[in-house]
View (tube, rainbow, N blue to C red):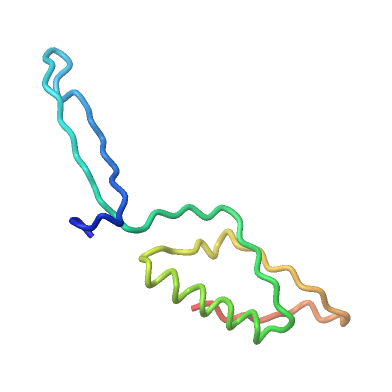
Length: 90
């Protein structure tokens, strides 16, 4: 990745001493940059949702990213009065 032409470079420059004109800098190269704000997954069944979550979790692990499951919300449309729903994450 460090020598690949298919990567992004992020460089930061700063004055190491405000009394002099000496500058320092650092550069990081990466092949993946991502920011995901809102994700909506729609499934017809709990099994389908489990499969979608499994695929997404595999993608996150492959790219060294994480999903903040504590900020996630699950909405369901059910015809019965049972308010319990189990969904396996990880």
